[in-house]
Image (cartoon, rainbow, N blue to C red; front, side):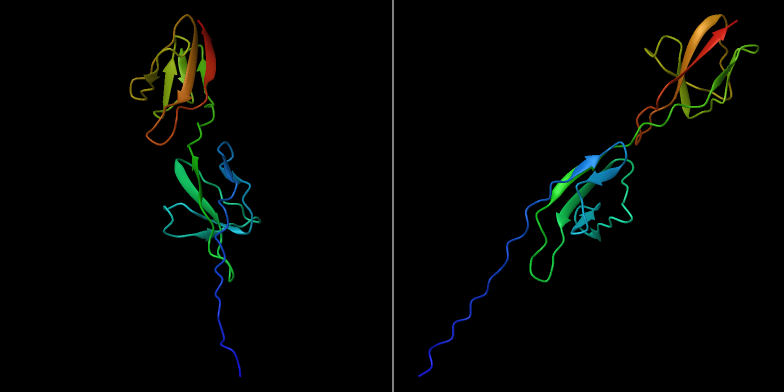
Length: 158
């Protein structure tokens, strides 16, 4: 007589969370590969990680990364990394020593005449003048999403 048939189902375990980190300066994931996928909306949608067209994550964004599901295994555990907005580059401003004004400054910038202790918003409608021997530091002002920029220092001598 034939014996009873027993069917055994095996369920593969989900892969462990990947060892992925954020290169915040260059806005890319470190350690991600083509077996992985990422989400920037809290896991609602997932995008395959493309090593040939590496995604960048600019600004303040949280990225979830996991090993993608295959026919044989479920999607992996999630690693979460945070990217922060990079500071803008130093502005290209110069001193017009004859007229005692900054050249190239605009309303997105701020300046300091005390070595960066205090900062004043640059007002294009009421352009500040800088008389005498003074060093003026200029940077792009911080916004809600971006930190203050790198500093350019210019010297006035008259």
